[in-house]
Every structure is written in C-alpha cells, then in structure tokens.
Image (cartoon, rainbow, N blue to C red; front, top):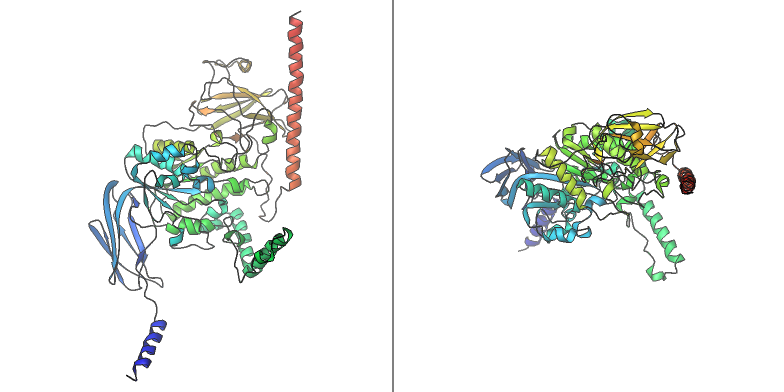
Length: 602
C-alpha cells in the first residue's frame, strides 16, 4: 500500500508527458447528406494517429491508407461515379475508432462565392417567402461556411464555422437561410436535370476581391505582387497589443465624451483582446487571400462543377477603386481556383457588381456617369475573359434589376439568369441564354455607329434606346440620343421611328452638344440607365461598355491613391456642369420649337 501513491503520481506524469493520440476524423466538408461531384475521382481525406492504417468503406467499395506526417494526414481516392440519388454510406475506421456518415448522393457541386450580396439569405429577399414555401427538394443540399478569415492557408474548417452544421437537405424551413442567389440558381438546375445538386455557401460580407484570391497567385503579376508586399510589410510591423490599446483608448474617450457612467466604461484589454479580423493585417477580409485561406481553399481536394461569384461593393468606393488591379485579380482568382481544384474546366459565372444607389435618369444622367462602380463591372468582365476557357465562363450583367441600397432585395433574377447560362452552355440544354459583343465603332460625321454580333433591342419592343453617353476630344460625356439605322443604309433614319425594317445589330449614337464625337459609353453608372437586351430577351441585358481609354485614375504603387476627396469633388462638379449645360440647351431648343409651332398656327 505504501507504493500506491508514487505509482499513481508516476502514471499521471507519464500521461501528461506522453504525446496525445490523434483523434480519427475526416475533413469537415464530409458529413451525412452531402453531395459528391459526379464523373470525377472521389477523394476522401482526414487525420488519424501517425502511422495508423485507415480503412474507408464507401458504398460497396473500400480503400486503405496510412496516416502520415506530423499531423497524421491520410487520403484515399475512389473511381468516379455517375449521378445517382441512391443514398450511400461512408465509413472510416482506424485503431478501434469509426466515423460513419449516411445519405450521401452523387451529383454536381457548385460554390457560391463573393461578398454579402451573394451571402444574402432567401428569407430577406423579394419573393423569398413563396420561393422557400415551394422548396421541397431533398436532392438539393447545402453546406454553409461562416466568416473564417485566416492569414495563412488552412487545412480544415472549424466546427463553429460550419453555420449549417453540415450538409442539409432543402426543405421550406432550411431554404430560408440559403443564399438567395444560390437557391434560385441551384434549385432550377436540380429540377431541370433531376440529379442531386450541392451548393457550398462561402461568401463573406464585406470581402474585397483581394481576400478572395488564392494566396499563391499574388506572385504571378507585378501589380498583385506589389500589393502583397505591402500587406506583408503591414503584417511585419503590426503590434497586436498596441492596436488593442489604441482601440480601447478611442472607445474610452467616446464613452467619456457621451457621459457614460464610469462603471460602464470599456475595460482595458489584455494582449490582443477586443480586436476583430478587420483590425489585424493579413487576417482582414480586405487583405490578400484571407477569406480564401479559411473559406474556399480550405476544402480543395473536393471536386466541384463550378463557381458562381458576386462581389464588387468594397472595391467600388471612389478612393479604394483600382480597376486595373481588380482585372488582374479576377484573372488570377479564376486561374487559382482551377489550379487548386486541379480542373481547368471548372465553370465560372460572374454576376456583375449590382450594389445600387440613386438610379440614373435623364434628370441626373451626367452626374452619375462619374462612377468607379462602372469600371469595376468592366474589370470583372475583362478579367474573366483574360482567364480563358470562355466556353466555360460567363459574365452576367445585373445592373437592370437592381434597386437602390447596399443590399438590393431582388436576388431571384440573378440566380435564374445564372441557371439559364449554366443550363445552356455547361449542360447543353434547350434553354435560351446569350450575350453580345461590340464588333466595331465607326465615326460618321457627327455620329458614332456601333456594330454588335447579335441583335440588341429592348425587351418591351420600345422604339426608344436609353443609356448611351457620348463625348468629344475634351472627354466630357453628355446623355446621347440613339437609334437603329434603317435597312438600306439611310443614316437619316436616326430621326425616324424605328420599325421592323431597322438594322438591329447596329446602333447610331449622337448628341447636338458633341459635333465631333470620339467615344461612347453605355450603361455607365453605379445604378445605370440602359434598356438594350440581347435578341430582345429580358434575361439577357447588353453589358455596360465604353469605347474610350480614359481610365479611372490609378497608381501602380499600392500605397498611393490618385483619387483624393478633392479629386472626387472635382469630377462630380465637372459632371454637374455638363448636366446643367445639357438641360439649358434642351430648354433653349424647347423654346425654339414652341415658337415655330406658334408661327405655324398664325
């Protein structure tokens, strides 16, 4: 008995000093109810005690692996399978432990990426109540990742960052929390194809595009590399404790100035207490790769069908707007997805920046042509084209359905349009979707004639074209008139009412205020006017574009901003002056017309 206490102490010390036995687990993306990508190899991976054999049973097939490395990572790969709604069981065993999942199906997996307008839930959106009420779709499954910004690539998703608790089947109750765009898109794909469809919601509110690009891609372009070097310098210079104290001192001063009772003053932090990810360089959702590290790249290895992307607001603020860099990053982002997921054919649809403001009208037209947001839309479209494999990509204009506000509630149209694109181009189904491109621009006297590769007409058969502006050498844009030429080449047709004999692949643009035009723009504003549709289809708006090279002021140095408050004010004042001049000229012409009518009546 006298040796019992020392023996117990020895056993306790040995237990504390002995290395912890790794718990058997799969990557968090694997849960019951999940959808695995059809027609591609199926990789299952996770962690166990290093050196342990791991047995994986998937349906009737089995495979073995050995946990390796410091973390004890293991992986197995099963052959590809065709789409099937027959539920499968996944069982993983090692060292007496077993992890089991059921109701796994094979279909297509799409990722819903971007910022808050993509994350915006169905229950907050227009018509979301009736959409969710109809959501009896057990073969539509969803996995939701909460904000998880990280300064370096992660290899798993923390349990508290899986907002959905794992993969869930779609019911009227669960659908309410789906991404509204994601639900509108995926529910239509699933019903049309009658196969299982999985969506991974991993959009992050407030994310800049910089945070959504795979971290390893920043070295691939000088503009991206210069920006990344700036982020690295901020990380190296960052003092977390000092930042926390600085933030506390500001909060304390606010509390004192507002007369808050002393017992309610904020407490002095210890270490880095009280800091959000926004406060920490490298982890902020504005910094290089942070959201990708913890929310997208974190599940690479899982095969996917494609990505639907919707972002832009944080990069479209006047003093933050860098369209050239945005274009580069869009290209690098798409390339990075395809590299990380080892599939050059990953389909990508980018829904154009749609955050609304006051709508552009005839009464404020010139003022709203000063728009960093329009340049971001252009960069999204051009950057996606730069990424190549255009048969598997689409830029999906969104400006025509938005309403004012940071989070426009009209989401269903965006998802439905994306579904049209995917069904038409990716799935080769008989459903209408198309886009149009500008083929040529020709200056003819005081007009500019534009030629497109497809007919461009309003979907309501209106004979009035809206949304064009025109400028001369001075770069001042005025609201323009526009129409289609009559067949037979009679340009004077611009003064006539358009009818069935017009050439609907050409548009003539002019303004009495611009005698020698050099450039036109279309739908060029944050919330632009523009009513042309490809082939006259309501779901295919002609994308915004410009024929000039007057770019938004932008420095290659990421620490230099060329648009100060004063610069922005000057731009707006010049646009307001152009608006005032046009209205004055229109008023003069109106008086002249009235006088002519009076003279005719005498």
